Length: 404
Image 1: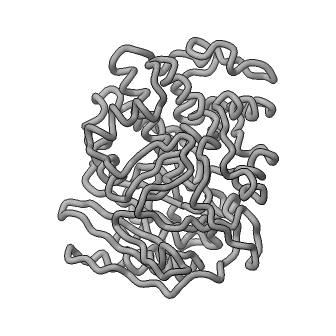
Image 2 (image 1 turned 60 degrees about the horizontal axis):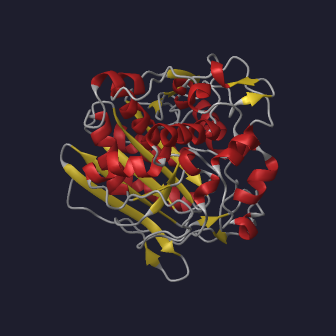
């Protein structure tokens, strides 16, 4: 991969992931499948775990020929338990695609418009310190052009939610109003239409709008509108429940501490209200592939709303934002759409082609990565048939990291 590609990944990944290789990674194995070859995907997944010093990872693919699964490393390094196709994991920011889908469905039903302002739905919530909610639309929330500061960039907040304070504060509950208030301590991003600012605050507010419009939480609406119709039985929105359903891997975290000797913590249990509508979803790899395929294929949204979701706002370095989704151009010319996410102990990506015929869900049960190209290479391998070489065109990655 060219140096420029590695730099792009560094901006999207390494800024927020604690750098450095871990000492705990086992020698990896790859689960074989009777369908197809996918040898490049299998190899890059193994490299991600072994060379990345990570505990374990899974890749689940769905394409024209059917489904395929590979695993490398361990779900639990202390017992030697392997990763499995049925693993439940925290999808983090992949939640944003569910939230955007619900809002677009509400627009299709005439219950709101994406051109409505935040002030219309949540009077007084976004005001002061340079903010005026009457000038920020719901559409701007979903494509990160609102200019609203990212509350997870607040040092005190992130210290407790995902930093050294996590062990003491992992069970703390947070309200959406609290998260928004934390963001508004910081002034808005200037010219957000020209320079989109990825902000978790946008989707916390979007979740509040869903509740105001329907009388139900975003999780309840997504369950009724998406999970049940698609039979996504391994997907849930946990609220204040800190546990993961079985089976699940241990979520290993360095709590954003840099250096090769940073302590590794078991971060499996955590109260996800610190991300809420910006990132609390729990899912399986098979469920996310099914959701991605149904969404892009037009099963969940009318054509007008689907076009809105896929209306791309360039964010630089070959990356773009739609409504709750991200775009990236791969080295072989294939353009993919999807969403990625990171929370304590989990790094995930749900990616697919724009024709809805090829999906990949990737999860690692560790949240550090020294070389972001290792992660990109799995995506490149699946959709291009090989990892990019040093002479290939740079391959930007969609926004993988939430915590800045």
